[in-house]
Length: 104
Image 1 (tube, rainbow, N blue to C red):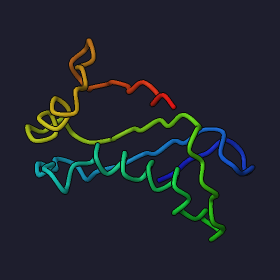
Image 2 (tube, rainbow, N blue to C red; image 1 turned 135 degrees about the horizontal axis):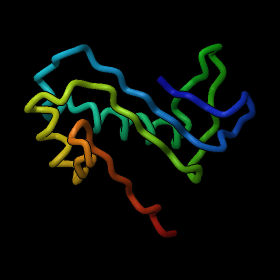
Image 3 (cartoon, rainbow, N blue to C red; image 1 turned 120 degrees about the vertical axis):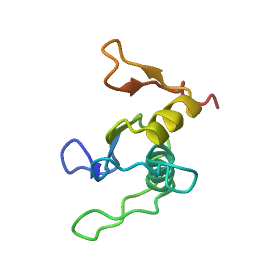
Image 4 (tube, rainbow, N blue to C red; image 1 turned 45 degrees about the vertical axis):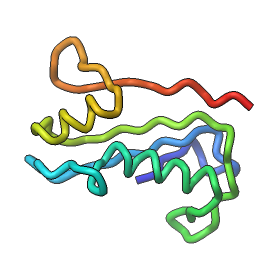
């Protein structure tokens, strides 16, 4: 799901929420929800996505992007988080991380 502030285009920021079925334990290459989120961000930034009403979203290469994956922390999901360089939260119930913006 892609969420945005208001309805104005181009988007001021990109928010992608990936929701997975409970107890999914097959988060491997090709089924990695973290990678799926990042690939969707790339598609939005390239202008390859439409709004819910079918209008094309113009290329938005500069706005910040925020990705949220809602999934149970199964062994394969924890491995994907570690592989992506994410850090465990203090309570051990999740992972987080960020990437610095690419310099031009």
